[in-house]
Image (tube, rainbow, N blue to C red; front, side, top):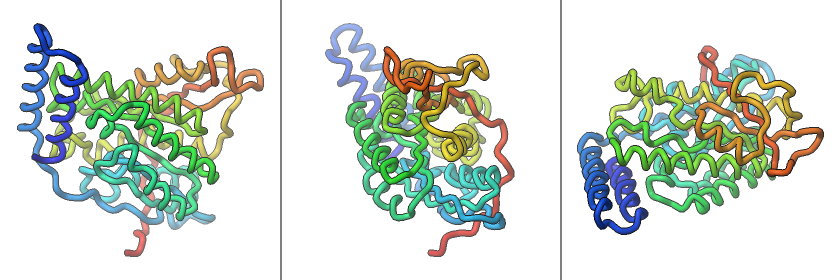
Length: 336
């Protein structure tokens, strides 16, 4: 059984075990979920190639001290399914950051395919040796498919964020994507995957912002594109994004990466929302809204000079998704 098929099987098993008894309607539900898992397993081919290595200096022709960027997390951060280094998520963020800031960016991707949140500590340990200015973390999907308790997964993520922030590193977290967008997963399994994904993303947002980081909700950000152009947006396994999919994800995260390097946290609340759905909320409310609206940034905010209100910490919602990335900066690969 390949890795992707095993993940689908775990979703199905968890749906049945977590749902209690299987009497009556539960038997029908059990059959539907298992049937959908078996179908998905048959339609997801195995991908054996590791993600391309994209470490190096981007925008080396720019003057100035390089911005040091590390990318941590799972296969989505590693770019599993991309064919070339330039198509990986980490490379797209590094190239865009170099072009926007007109400075070289030294990027190191430490993400591990298949990683759960409990696998972040060794990545963080290596990351701190790079003396990074900013860390981007994408994690959570494997916690959902393995049905790791949300509180447990978030605890590991928060420890990573606090460790990085304690070392003076800015942190941006791309929260758990919506696994219900994966085409081989059909209802009712798709509905369960979507619910669990959003629960994880909401909890991640609250915890990360409390720990001093910023989040960007990925959710089903790419859903419409994936359904309209599945052959282009998915890799061959139909489970992970292709290079085009990763570039689209980078468009959502890059503006927040730039903001983390240039704007204070917590920021004074904006007087007038920039667009519908933006503005200041309590952090729990902001997290719930962000989980429902992909591409939404959540960061700490102040209202009248105060970080907290009656419902807890204030948070600012922004929707900064870029329709285009800057032209990719040239990369000088890291020496082997």
